[in-house]
Length: 423
Image 1 (tube, one colour):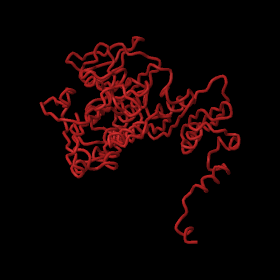
Image 2 (image 1 turned 135 degrees about the vertical axis):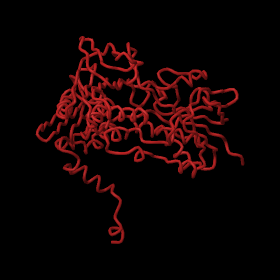
Image 3 (image 1 turned 180 degrees about the vertical axis):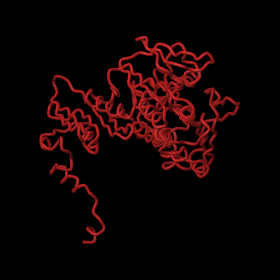
Image 4 (image 1 turned 45 degrees about the vertical axis):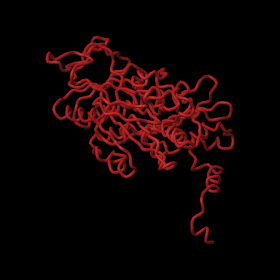
């Protein structure tokens, strides 16, 4: 029986995870072709920060090497950007003229970093932070220049700042918000994080707007002008002010897009032959950027590509577990709380630990942890299920390990050891 043709545009973590799931379910169903714009096999984009900081090499973060594609019969085109989808002829066309026919098409095009539309944004030395090429440029600049400015106080911005600092640059982070990681942390945890990073020599300019990037007279960036009028010296400017889903390819093909490629609960677009997954997809109004939701999407998408047809993706409950420059952080749910909430906090500045739990109507609805996050999964499960916490309330702040009822439940659910089975 002739195999169906599956073409995937994009070679990132979400797309390749879909292929892995599909190959488990239906290893002989498809002849698979993958087009990746980067000249690399699939790698762990999350681990670019340790590479920048000098803690790992590029080779260490490869997830699926070239042998994996070969062993699974996947045709991989690296360094080939798809520029057109011909839906009538069911073909994709690459920039160099390479074409591939499909019976099913999977769009996993990811997202682009936001480059602020300000004067000087096209100067040399102004980059985003999304891929290996960006990381290599930062490493090279750090070896020859001194001053770096990072625009954006989110996770990527802080990791870029830390990596550049570790490579010897003087680094300033400019952030429009009043606090770092303001979508993931409350004000107290954000302040602790800032204090820690300032002790490492990183400078912060909060509640500041960048208005212009100044030219050195030779087409390279020389300084960052703020709305306050201050000019910060900059041999390198890293834009870490957010991302936008890559939808241009889908839009030009006539697929419905609105802050992402619109998909159903089966991850199909309005063309039933075309699926979209990952940061480029908009599901029920949300474009997810965290790994866990994207891998949940991958399982559902693979299920339908395998023509099993029973799985649905209804969205993801989000928790954020981060390691910013060696500092463990966790947040989930409504961790800021409101007037109807009861808020419990534990603070140990000497140990670098801060915990905040938000309770409403007898249930845990939010958690924010700084420095000690091992109970994050337990809190997340309590938040996700909405269960009543009365029986565990007195132990809640001190963790699952000291809670008798939770330990008993864990013991009941634990698989017996070989010695126990023999007994």
